[in-house]
Length: 576
Image 1: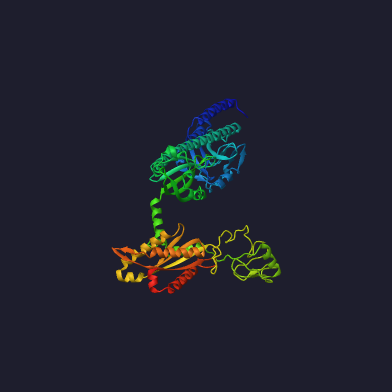
Image 2: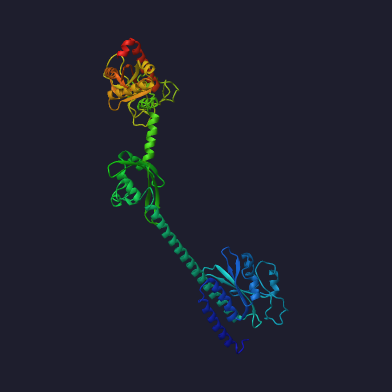
């Protein structure tokens, strides 16, 4: 039965509750807020001991604040209880609206779990609502979304009794306000951490930008930032001093160009094939004086912001010296060190580039070839020079195959020997076949003439005057041969006193005339160290033709040269 003074007690308690709730909102940090929560329970709600168990990120609960007993505070503050043990406690005992009360008669089973706790022994209660030292009263705190924030534990009511309806309601209201205060404190802490992190990131960004600016501006090699995408794709936005010096243009002028405006016309394809992300290319860029410099470009894509425009960062390295050395090494590998002429390997490479394994000969029409395929007749004029005939079962129901290594089927009207050029991507579709003029009659056919030259009388000069004189003779012969041919023709030294001339677009009579002119150019005396020496020359004329290898072509010309050499007397050979 409510006593006469109880309304006054309620009013005093409400005032205390209002005061301690107001204190909750003045705390600044999360730790201050937690300590204010437990202090408010001891000061305003009439309990001697109070504790806040806060949920950690891993789900377990830690004793985060304690008030009322320094010894107990030192004993359990910072200790952790598992989430499972706490959930067990919050489902036991009596449910007082939002509170959970576990009387001492049931709490003995909790003495061995891992939840930090304090308790003292005491006598059995003398009356029904007397508080026992092993009684437990918990006030769970929930966030607005229903998530458990923590649990308030209270002990030892100052009046020695279990709280009545008003005391329970006051503790429940306080736990609700404490949950709000803890959520706000966490929010403020998260915001403060975010602000600190943002400030650090901004400082790091400013430092990074300054480092990038200095690295960009003072880099020893060229650097450029170009626009990426849009109508102005590739336009230079920023260049460093090293690139300006390399190209001989000020930064204000370079901003009018893109790399495609500066690249050598022969290298534009290389530039366009270069990937924007991680792409690399070696090409030539134009300088202000009209010359070109070899550079190595390395690209990377950078973003201005998380969703901002992207830019192309290009590193430009001067490789002119390295390229010069590479060209020198390549020239040494492919040219004779004495005369500077292409050597044997380079000659075979140039000759092989003009030859294919399938010779060009008279072609049958498409209709004739198709008729032959279905009627089994022989058709001449295949690319490989063999007859083509149908063979039952050789290539399917309507298939046929040639006697050579290549097989064809009649499923494609252009896929057979003798057919006209078809819009396919075969290995010979775009090859211009090399043919040899007729040997017995000059029918006007033009071909690739191979003139094999062997010097007459050179060995005696070497033996009599030494290798120094012999080398001087070879150098002069190389010069005279080079002077006597057209631009685009090849003069090569096979080795020793043997030279080869490749001259394209000549008929049989043209090749014979060229051999005579070159022989006459070699015959005049050659002066070496004040001494005049003379050599003659024997020429053999061969013809390159698809279906032959480079060695076969050279062997044919060599044989013709020896035939020509044996047909003349020794004295006549020396006289030319």
